[in-house]
Structure formats: structure tokens, C-alpha cells
Image 1 (cartoon, each protein chain N blue to C red):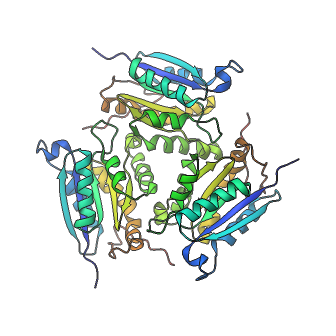
Image 2 (cartoon, rainbow over the protein chains, first blue to last red; image 1 turned 45 degrees about the vertical axis):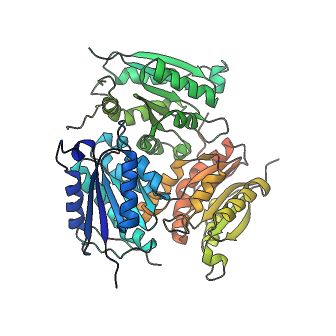
Image 3 (cartoon, rainbow over the protein chains, first blue to last red; image 1 turned 120 degrees about the vertical axis):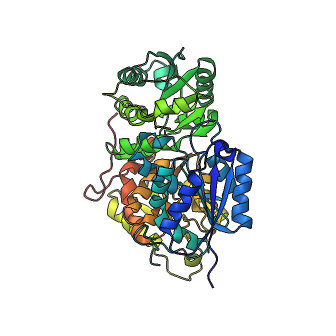
Length: 177
Length: 177
Length: 177
């Protein structure tokens, strides 16, 4: 019997969480994941302000209680004062995977030189992978496609569920032992 | 009324600060900034030894008292025992922007394979951006040109002064909201 | 009189250290170094489990007591729970050289998208350079060739022995002063 696939989608934005403007990041992540995944999966969405302890509590809940194998965030990764998503992510993770941030910045850098301002990271908490994505909807899809080929194997290594992808969108890579 | 633009230029070198040899890094930064910027600006130059607490005190003074929106350092980023510029920079910054170091190493790596030995970083202290550049004058210009397109927008996000650049040298990029 | 060149080769694997399967990483490192180096050198090999304090003690011994100018590890750099080689390496080093990890991941990424899962780092302990390599024998050679051009100059900066390489395999780069 296969494990259920729960994926956390966290919009981190003072203004979106106050209803000042509409959340575009969360739906953009959901659309990109629907485009990528062939496994059945259940999204668990949250919308929260740029507050470090709220972000940490939300990530812990999604990983530990909601059993999300993957948690994807949008927003709060820039250099501005209220941007604290990477700090919150790092503090709830046991391991940081620097290659994710490097790869997402490298991909974004081909499009905009301000990609170097993004501090997005990815890390492991228990059996969950947490990945920060940028705030802009167009950049979300680019970054997710860039790192997704490695995500199913990463979850295998964490004894998580077996994810399958639509090969014409993303080819999941699993090295031969 | 626009904010005055003060830019700190810090030469970090035991030998240059003792007068054993002439400072070439500081003037190389100043020349590169004159080539890049079309905004009027005032350089605030310092020359100090490779001493961690002196570097930290100098960076704090330039950011907090001299109101430099940008502080650029040269020297002390290698693997040798006396090289402590990145440690000092990290300890006075609230946020580190990994993309700057990655991008500067990637650019230098096209020229010399020893670029991977450079530990240069960039970070935010309050409303100031601090960027470590290499010690060698030729590498200073290459690295500054590589990251400068993102610097004006970074300062916008920190509520700093509005920097303009000479488009034929560096095209500042400001994403549309 | 030139300094003797001792190089530590550390296989980090629960199963190899229990004899469950044969160590392939250690011999792969030794073969790659024999291919690269023209200086005479002495390998000092260790095989240990994925246990953080054992890894730290082994690295300290190789650097401080065995006087290895270079220590190369294989294994334990992934996202799985037992993978703790980067944590152990970081805790015994005074300086981390981010460019090594970036460059090794960039090289591996051309071959496999799962390269972003590797957390391998390099750092300085006293006069020794410690470099984490991947666990897979084929990836070991690729990564070592990618960073080796910078290693002899790095050891020069640490007042270590003068390494020479076979130019047709790896061209050591020493910048002119």
C-alpha cells in the first residue's frame, strides 16, 4: 500500500494574508504541481503573514502533523526587512540543501539579474522536504520545474511516498544503485 | 528631495595599511564605481589591517554613522589564516545574500580556476548593502560589473537612495511590480 | 627540503565499514589522485561508519597528527538521516570554501539532476584542506578533476607542501603575484 501524498503550499505575505491583495503565489504553485505530478496528491494550503514564528509554526505543523512529504513556500525571500522566510525555514530544518538555492538562482539569473537578491533555500525536516520559491507567479513555475527532477528521489531517500511525474513536463531522475 | 549617496570603500590589507605597499584595491573600486554610476555620489574610504574586530567596527561605522547605502570591501577573502573579511562581514549583517558570492565566483571562474578559493559574500546591515570584492584590482571590476545590475533595486527594497547607472556600462534592472 | 605530502582518504559508510559491501569510494579516490599528482605522496586511508563524532575525530587526527595537507572524504553527503559528513566537516573547520561545493554540484548537474541533493563542502582546518566528495565512484573522479586545479595554490596559501600535477590530466593554477 502506498503512502498518501500530502503537499503543503504556504503563501507568506503580509498583504495577501490581510486580504489587501489576492494571493497569486499559492494558486501558481498548485497549478505547477498539477502540471508536474502524475501521482494523486492532496494540497494543504496556508496563507500567513511575514512573521518568523508564525512561519516556523506553520512549517512544523505541515511536516509533523499534516504529514506533508513536501512543503513549498512562496514569498519572503528577498532582502527587505520583513523578508524572513529563509530564516524560518533554516530554523526548522535539520539539513540545508544548498544546491536547490544555487540552481533556482542560476535559472532565474538567465531571465533577470536581480535573481541574486533571492535568498531562497531548501531543507529537510524529518521526512519532509521544504522548498522556498520566489514570490512572483511567473518565477514560481520556472524554479519548480528546475528542481523537480531531483525531488522524487530525495523523498525516496527520506523513506517518503513514491512520487511520479508527467515525463513530458518533468522527468523524475532516480539513479541506479 | 533625494537622499545623498554615500558609498564606503574599504581596503583590508595588513601590508597596505602599514604602508608596505600601495593600495591598489581601493582606487580600483573607486574607478569602477565612477565608470558605473550616473548619480552623484561621495566615496568614504578606509584602509585597515586584516583584523576582525577592526573590520567589524569599520563596517558598523560606515553603515550606521556615515550612512553609506553601499559598502564595498577589497581583500581578506581567501583561505589564508589572516583572511577574515567574510567572517567580519557576516557578523555585522542581519541577512546574507548567497547569490552575490555565487555570481562573483561564477564570473571569476571563467578566468581563473582558483576562483573557488574566494569566500566573498554580501549581506544587509539595516539599510546598507555590504559587498566583499576580491583583492586583485583586475578581478574587482569584473566582479562589480557582474553584480551591479541588481544593486540599485536592492537599495530600493531597503528604502535607500535611488541609484542610476550609465546604461552603456551597467544596466540597472528594476522589475515591474 | 620539501615537506612530505600525506593525503588522507576517508571512506564514510555504515555498510562498507561493517564489511557488508566492498569499499569502492576509497580506491576510486586513490586512483584519481595517482592519475592527477606528479609529486610523490603517501595515502593515509580510513574506513569509518556514518557517525558524526567518529568522522570528526578521524578528520582531526588526519589533519593534526598525521599532518595530511589534504583530506578527501567519500560518502555521507546526501539528504538521508545517516548522512552527516558535511556537518562533521564544518564543525572541525575554521573556514568553509563555498566555491568547492558550488563547482562540484555544477559539474555533477551536467550529468544528473539529483546533483542538487549533494551537500558536499570543503573547508580549512589549520594547514589542511578537507574536501567532501560524493559516494559514487564515477562521480568522485569528475568532482576531483573539477576542483583540483585550485588545490595546489590553496595549499601554498596555507604554507603547505608544493604539489605538482600531471598537466595532461590537471593543470594546477598559481596566479602571478
